[in-house]
Structures are given as C-alpha cells and as structure tokens.
Length: 231
Ligand code: 1GP
Image 1: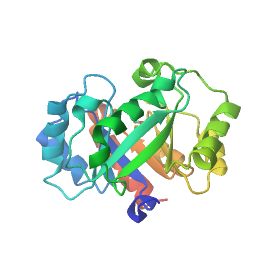
Image 2: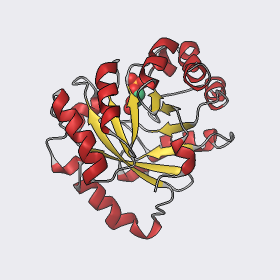
Image 3: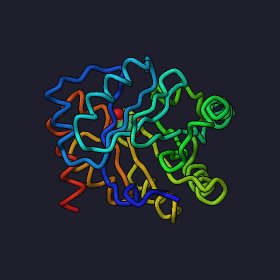
C-alpha cells in the first residue's frame, strides 16, 4: 500500500552523490518547498558520497529518499528507499538479479513501510543509466504495455518514465498516465524551467528535476512553485 503522503507528492529534486553541491545551494533546494529529495545517481555512487548528502539534508525537514544504485552505498537513516527495476533492460540482471542479491543480504532489515519499488522505463539512449542497464528502446506500444504490466502484473507503486538528460515527449507521458490507475507515474528528464515542469506535471503525478539544479539552479528551483501552486 502506498504511503498516503507519497500520493500527494508532485515534485522531487534528485541529487547525485557523485556531484558537488554547495551548502548555499543545498539550503535553497531543501527549503524550496519540494515534496522530497532523492539521493541517487548512476556512476561513482559511494557510501561516503551518500552519507555526506544524507547528513547535510537531514538538517532540514524535507523527506529524504535513497534510490538504491548499488549494494555498497545502502545505509540506514533515510525516510524512504526506492528500489529501481529496469523494465526495458535486455538483461534480467537489472530487473531481478541485483534485487534478489539485495534481499538475500538485507532482508532482516527491510521495512516495507519505507520501501517502494519503481518500474523504470528508460527512453533516452544517451542516458548513462540506459547504457549501464543495457536497455532496449521501446516503441510507444511497448511503453504502454510496460506501464500496464507495472500496475496489473507486478503491482508496483511507481512507474518511472525516465528521459534522464533530455526532455521527453509529453504526449507519450499523457498516454502512459491513461494506462495507470493506482500506480503513480513519475516523470524525469531534462526539466529546466517552469514551462516544462508544468507541461509534464499535467500528466505525471510527480516530476523529478535533477541535472538542471547543477547547471541553472535558479530556474530549476522555480519548477517547484510552477507545479505546486500554479497548476
Ligand atoms: C534522473 O529523472 C531524473 O534520474 C532527472 O533527470 O537529470 O535530466 O533532470 P534530469
């Protein structure tokens, strides 16, 4: 069952533990009014990097989520843990096997009130995660079938349309939303300003803003108000 507070979320910032962020910018991010902060990345995610961000974000009241990238950087102390499953990977490893390993190692510690599994569909061939997880580019029909499977076959709480690094197709996001009833739709990728934030949040339940925080923080920070008040 999806935690009630998550059901109300509209906006999340994603911070990469492999990237530097100043205290000043982190303060603006944590006080921005975003619903939560995800700590997660693809390359060079280390326990030190994760712990550094966790301890700094913990000074604020904003909920803090670890999106698990590898076994080495799993640590207690987050409010929530998101476990990705890459639905359009060509390898069972990214859908099943690493999660299986993680369960063998951490089963005793797993609190399912805090854990949410995300069905990822990665649609940008240039994204690091696309390459790392050895993905296959799905057609629109494929994406809609993945969304259907995420909800109906796997009962996943979250379906994540991931365009990491590039702005995606809002029409496709709209069609995906029509496919889902209980499963929440997350959209992430290339959101740099209010207009894009508003466009994607017309369809997605939650938008995730990552990279633009590091490149143009002022505009990235404006995406919060764009989706939370001015809908
Ligand atoms: C990455 O979906 C998030 O996992 C956000 O993407 O970094 O392109 O904003 P961007």
